[in-house]
Length: 186
View 1 (tube, rainbow, N blue to C red):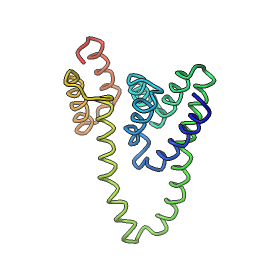
View 2 (cartoon, rainbow, N blue to C red; view 1 turned 30 degrees about the vertical axis):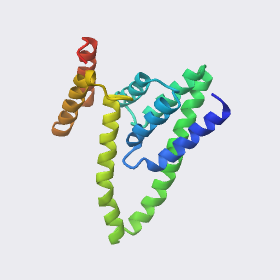
View 3 (cartoon, rainbow, N blue to C red; view 1 turned 90 degrees about the vertical axis):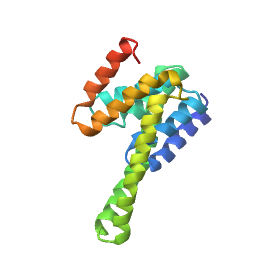
């Protein structure tokens, strides 16, 4: 990777940060498009593993961005570049959204009774849900949906229903998915 590539990676994450309504996970489809399909800086399995490991680990969900940066840098050639990738992606995804959230939440709280503020909050809910569905689609299908991955889609669909209708911890579902994968069922 050249210096221009690192600047491009940082700039891309700065922009994604401003689009991360509902959390950084909602920008995962674009991260997949950019990192896996366009730039080929990481593989599909690395992308999916980054999200799965971060979701299973304790701590903030945004850690999947750090793992993606780490994998991009590691694929570029060294632990130093992996550390650089981690810092570039995390600063890029956190700086604009944290600053904007801080300023907007103060303004929104002061003006919470305005009709426009209430309408904006209600209008954002379907957008966040659509972005989460798109993220699930990318994680379940990878770069190109294939009919042979139908069992994987079924597992993803059943897991989504279980998460929606029960309070079962995600680690149980991740473990069940791992067992199914271990036996070659998905």
